[in-house]
Every structure is written in C-alpha cells, then in structure tokens.
Amino acid sequence: MATISTQVDAQQLPWITVPQRKGAFSMFKLWPRPAPTKENHKAELELLQSGGITAHTSQSTETVDDPSGKNIAAELMDVDIDDAGNYIHTLAIRQKATENAAPKKARHSLVMTHGYFTGLGYYFRNFQELGGVDGWDVYAIDWLGMGRSARPAYASTMTSEEARVAGAEAFFVESLEEWRKRVGIDKMTLCGHSFGGYMSTLYALKYPERVEKLVLVSPIGLPEEPPDYQEKLRNGFRVSRNRNKPAAGQDTTPEYEEADPKAEAPAPSRAWMLMFRAAIGLWDRNYTPQGIVRTAGPFGRRLINWYVGRFAWLTDEQRKSLSDYAHQISTLPGSSEYALGDILRPGAFARLPLVNRIDGLAIPTVFMYGENDWVDYTSGEQAIRRIGTKAATSLHRISAAGHNLHLENPAGFNKVLIDEMLAISKQ
Image 1 (cartoon, rainbow, N blue to C red):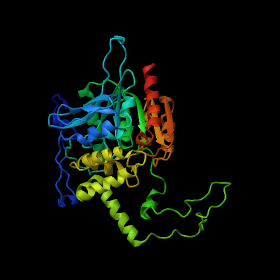
Image 2 (image 1 turned 135 degrees about the vertical axis):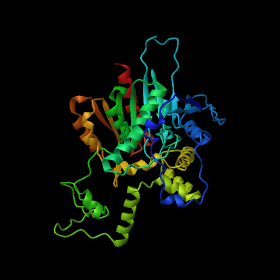
Image 3 (image 1 turned 45 degrees about the horizontal axis):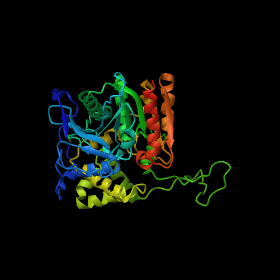
Image 4 (image 1 turned 180 degrees about the vertical axis):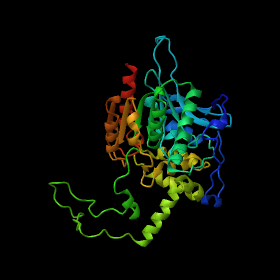
C-alpha cells in the first residue's frame, strides 16, 4: 500500500493532545481483540471487487482476481497526517492522462466521506460508475479513528457543552484538511453521508476556498430539537396515541382513536424508564455500537450478520462481503466513534444544530435524501432557506431508498451525483 507522509508538529494537532479514553466496558476483555494493522485487507478487497473495483495495495500480498476484466483499477493507500504514525485510509481512482487529452484540460476531484458505524467500503456499489466520469479523480476516505484509518486515542472535552462539541468537530475537520494537503488536492467536490455530511458541512464552512461543491447525503445534525424534546426525554420518547391520525378529508382508520385532549398521556412503565435512562446515560458517556460488538466477541459477528442481513437489495455474495468488512472495522480498537455523543443529543439532534450555522455557507450545495429516509428531508429545505441566494442549492429525494440511499438505490444516487459532476466539468 502506498503511504504519503511529510513532517508536521504533532503537538499542534487536535487528535494528538487527548488522553486514552477508558470506560466501563474496558473491564470485559473476554475475547481477543484485533490490533490496528495496515495489512489484512482481504475483506475490503473482496467487497470492492463485488462492486467492480480491483484495488491494489503495495503493503499487503493479498489480491483479488478480476476474471471479467471489466473492473476499474483503484489504489488503496494510507496517507500519513502527522509524524506520530496517524494516517487516513484512502481509496483513489485516478484517471490516467491520454494522448488525446487537451494539455490544459481541467481536472476535478470528488472526495467521498462515510457515515457513522461504516467505512469507505460502503460506497462499493457506486465507485465503478463514478470512477468512469471523464476528467475526474475519485477519492474515498475513512475518517480518522474509523474504518481502516489509524486509531488514535480520543477523549471528550467535558468542561462545557460548547468545548465538548468544538473538540469533537476539530478532530475530524482538521484531520481532513491535513489529508487534503498531503494528497495535493487544491479544490474538491465534497460528498458526505449522514455523519460524514455533518463533518463535511463544517469543513466547507471553515475551508470554503477548498470546496467546489458540497453534496450532503441524508446529513444528520441539521435541525434544532423539537419544542417538546425535553418532555419526550422525560416520558422516554413514548409515542402519542395520535400518531396514526388521518389527514384532513380521510376516513378514520381502525388504528386511530382520537385521544381525549383533557386526558393525560399514559405514564411509561417503571421498567421502560429505567432502561431508557440507562440508555441515555450510556449515550452521554459515549458508549457505542462498535463497543457492543467488540465486547460480545464471537456473538458480535452474529449482530453484524443480523444487521447486514436486513439489506435485501444486496446479493448473498455482497451481504457476506459487507458483513466480513463491517465486522473487521467494528472490532478494531475504539477511537473517534466515541465522538457521536459529543456531537448529538439522544434522538440524533445536534447539540449545536447546523441549521443555525449554515447561513454562512456560500458554496453550491446539493441535498439528497432517501424516499423512506428516517432523516427528515424538510431539514434540508430549512437549510436551503437559510442559505438563501448566497449559493445555488437543490434537493433530491431518491426513490426506493432509505437512509443508506447509495447502497439501496445506487443508480438513483449515482445519477444525481454524476449530473452535478458533469455540470462542474462544463463550467
């Protein structure tokens, strides 16, 4: 695997100055834990292969054959971002110059960032088509501390909520900027899914001169918490009896019964509230799904298999490859996964909502949501109103897809993204 590195003062970087975080789960070491490694790429290589990408790495002897001969070639590399051994794992699909290419033909870079509990491999159904767009180099990264990137120690800054959020955001934004400088990208179209959309927005706000266009795919952290958020916390997020209320003009459904407006909502059971408050406490202390998988040992693999097994739109071979990959990246030592509770409140509402900060964005921005997305697309509409006339904006809802729209409907996702890439090429 290729490695890119230069010298930098590690003590000035936000991912170096934190102590190792330890939690209650650290006492349960019943199973062997894998150590961070730049080798053992088989799961990742096979997943990419199933999506039409033959990836090469100089640091591993593992290879995957391409019997069809139709795959796109890519390079896996670890880009060093400091002199302390930290690196960002990267997939690069670079187009070679041809004799027919104009000498001053503009080249563009698409950089794709993943969501929480995933890695760059989750774009395996998109790379082949995106990598074929003329004049574009395509990169995908694993966020520092996630995927197959380095796993530096991460600890929350608990002095105040503002400091807690700022420390978490700097960890990701500044490591992405350091990566950009090492790779030598002057300006990029930055595409981020979910958690990656949140961090990509923050990067664009701080380094607007480095972003040509921003593509936010079902981004979390946009809206403010609802007015009844605190009441929902007190009541354990119990759902109102009016949840199936029909729209105006529709007949009453058997599932709906009008609640007496004077009647109090039924109190949640003591057992529910105990479990709910325990879950809230774990959230605030940054316990994670990955931690559960690691602690569960061989049973953690069953959890991953169950999770990936729900992806009915994948073939059996793809589900196996994705499950192998997801289990591998989930069982590596915990690092920046612990940042989720620093950024979001329970219920996935940002502690410092982006909608209150995005009005400073003056970069063309595209929003994408799945038709059946659990993230509400109206938060994107609200963001577009906040941006106003400062930048061109658009919003797309991808049919037959939920939150993982790039996985569920890759053709619909790719079409929107490629149209945006071609629009830049024509400028």
